[in-house]
Length: 449
Ligand SMILES: [Zn+2]
Image 1: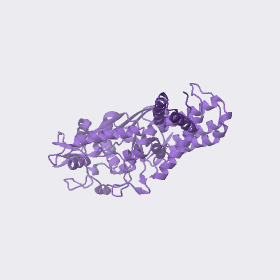
Image 2 (image 1 turned 60 degrees about the vertical axis):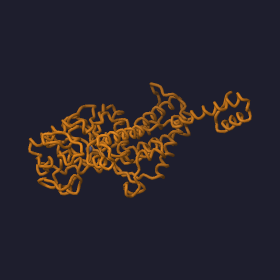
Image 3 (image 1 turned 45 degrees about the horizontal axis):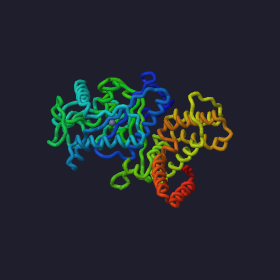
Image 4 (image 1 turned 90 degrees about the vertical axis):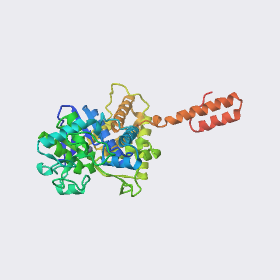
């Protein structure tokens, strides 16, 4: 299996540190607002990657951090009057509900920054002890000049750090130095005690404190959105490799591409900002998931009504085909149906090639097109094999291929109608009850009195 790493800018053969085990970390949400569809794209992608690694036989441990102390949370708390910790818990809960709806179920551990203060403080202390960080009157900073390799992930230089967040009038030695700890500024902000007085951690340090605690100094895969490469991931490498003296901190850096809306960057000022909750008012979660996976995770993706509609239709084609396979999948599968062998190989080869889901999905349509007209002539064994393959594909993509479950609501409706009809018959209102029967029959439902 080959995986593209941002660090080397090339596809590399996937080799884990511990045989058959993968430690996976993905930057989680800053919980001050509802997650938007760009977040949905990133987390669906990594959920699918985890599903595929598990399908390949790896034991994967997947951690996401939850940034529950941050300037954005504090600012939102001041605007709304809701205490910062209450606000953070509220949006964390809503985030996890959203992810569950999108069938993003693979995260093994959500690690909150505020639950890891001892680890954060300990890592900062070691950076100071080793001469990489220094304390000033308003905080503790990493001294960029002490770490030669800064910029190796993003291929950028330190000057560019100046234009990024966390930069204000400070007491830093160099403008590029970034905050590890911020000392208390006002009264109404969350603070924790530390050797440098009350304060709170900088954003970058929470990730490396968390991953060092659970995974150790080096691990297999780190993921996140493309926008996090600089300065966030660059700072992570700097902190961890400085403190451990070991390189690389992470073997494979995976980044998801941007999500645009109708060709434009999503932003509140352009009024094209869509939360996952808003999306799910109009679309089935599977439709969005299928839409996301129809583009490679590293490529930009353009969200529009048309493209969602297209995904809806494509997914429906798979479901209708699946419905035609009127067999039960059994334990041992015995088929040498060539069309299936060809397209299932194409599916798995594509997934092995840096998780190329659009090519893998195209292989499903290859299978459907080439076997649809032959179904009546296929043996039960062959149909079972096709169905078993589609079940695997459905599980890997995290998208349901069964029609019935989608229409689950209509079963309840039918029950209500048939109860009404029974009552009508009991009251001898046969005209009406017969009309309901005839209408239902014309829709394809059979009524047995
Ligand atoms: Zn992060």
